[in-house]
Image (cartoon, rainbow, N blue to C red):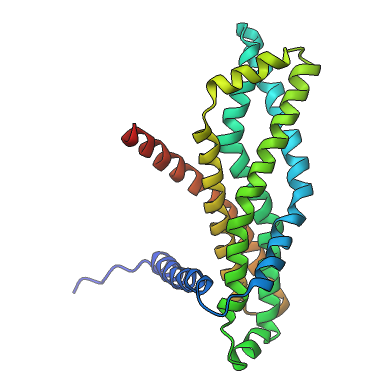
Length: 261
């Protein structure tokens, strides 16, 4: 008799993915169910959005400075320093803005989400909420997911603005590129759709990290050690997922514009 092949890792992976999809569907569905948790939503908007502004500002301005410096060094070798502006803008708007915003907020807010829910799970607070007749997914997970989806495109837009301000400063005051030429080249080469692509990506990244981190926190076990492990895994998995999703979304968006064009 031929022994059946067994792939424990693959089976476990499929089981976890199935469980996560069920959790994600329940979380998304709970956002549109009554009672609407407006107070909790605004609290999470303040936590995910407002408290991330300072780190987004610092990251954005130095990203614009560093990227402009490297591109200027390359383009000056071929006599095209005037193209630094649109090249930086294209990289920021399409890729670096949404990806770096997603990674930063996933590390800061996503890790906190996993830790908060994990602590509530091991201290049996989630069980207490369930005993009181309140859906813990609708009360704890839904507002965090919605706040992340709303906040991340706004933070991405702020990142884009700050990064371009940094790029303008170094190009005009250090590399002595004319300010009018800098912005004229950007308006000539950059379309509104380039900015929109990045904002759409940011919304998806907010959905990804919030679902992954809340899932890891919601199903934490093993006491304080389990909270740390859930937080670590939630952040790592969400960051890797954002990188993978960026590649997939970029190809889908390119395919869409090819079909639409």
